[in-house]
Amino acid sequence: MATESGAPVYRYGIRDNLAQFSHQLIQVFLVGLTLGMMRTVVPALAESEFGVPRGSFVLLVAFVVAFGFVKGAMNFVAGRLSERLGRLKVLLIGWLLALPIPVMILYAPDWNWIVAATVLLGVNQGLTWSMTQTAKLDITRPEQRGLTIGFNEFSGYLGVAVAGIITGYLASAFGPRQGLFIFGLATIAVALLLTLLWVKETLHWAKAEGARHAAGRSSGPQARFPDNIPAQPDTWQVFTLMSWRDKRMFAFSQAGLVEKFVDALVWVYYPVYFYQQGLSLAAIGWLVGVYGFVWGGSQFLTGKLSDHLGRRWPNILGMWICGGGVALTLLGSGIAWWLACAAVTGFGMALLYPNLSAAVADIAHPNWRGSAIGIYRFWRDLGYGVGALLLGLASQVSGALSTGFWLVSVAMLLSGLVLWVWGEETHPRLNPAS
Image (tube, rainbow, N blue to C red; front, top):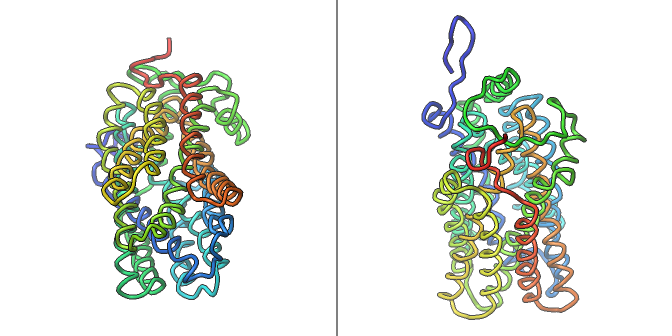
């Protein structure tokens, strides 16, 4: 930020705000570490360590159901709060609320404590991950949105993947509870310290951008903003627009919800399924890790790609490739086959994940972009809860984990079709407003 005649002048772009952009990347990496610590050890040892009866699929998925519904709601809350309190305060609150999680895991007498800890994790993730994404979009240029979200999701899911591997080894060395306690407490403490020392408020950039739009001084191709919403909408107006009144936003929101079925499957069913196939915790950690590494690392390319070629086809093809990777998992056996399937699934996620968010950001006005992203993320992360619940019910009825894999694969195919029919290209340069 510079000053001109005593008034602040806000400069946009990754290069112009590299220091703050980098701090936000570190933050989302730590957010990913916090999520990742729950993704390998906890599901695999649900029966032996936390007393979940064998075959109780609905009880097994309960902690992810709780996480999804809570995180989805907190994404919605975070978006609105951030336009009132600012991005920094919401981020800090999210980290403070995470502090009890490692202690609850350490002393959990039964599965109910794990569910409760995951509820707090959902609050933490909804507040912190939303703010890292929104803050980066505040300070970057419209033509950098795909790359910006690609960077954000790469860093976050790199953290998820790294945590999945490290906690597998820590559980073997120190025991599952002690390993997760050490890892979780260290991660949250570092995040709090860095937030207090180096993260800055970015809401001023969004307000300045909104003022330029209002004055007709924005440059470059114009986004196709929805024309059935006021300049300063209330919460209900933004929610209904994102959920059903605008068919583009509906298409993005439903795709976000369904793609989380895949992540719920990887979170709950990967560890249990592969543990039943005789793999060790460390090997399972690598399978989950490869999915996360390919997902995270490929977003460098897929986010940047969409800035040049558009959002539409990366999103549609990502849904179908990801669903195909899930189905392929059941069509072969052996660690090499499963690693390849995890990589295909992760690449499909990399195609769609940053670019659905970028599509929302393309056509959401700066005045209510934070709320739009929050509501999209509400529907997207609600997919954890809806997907996990459907997985549990389907497997409970059929008595087989494989039913869940087929359910997710078909859902991704159908959701991609909806995105194809009702979505459109949102990149302002490729499909500008007249």
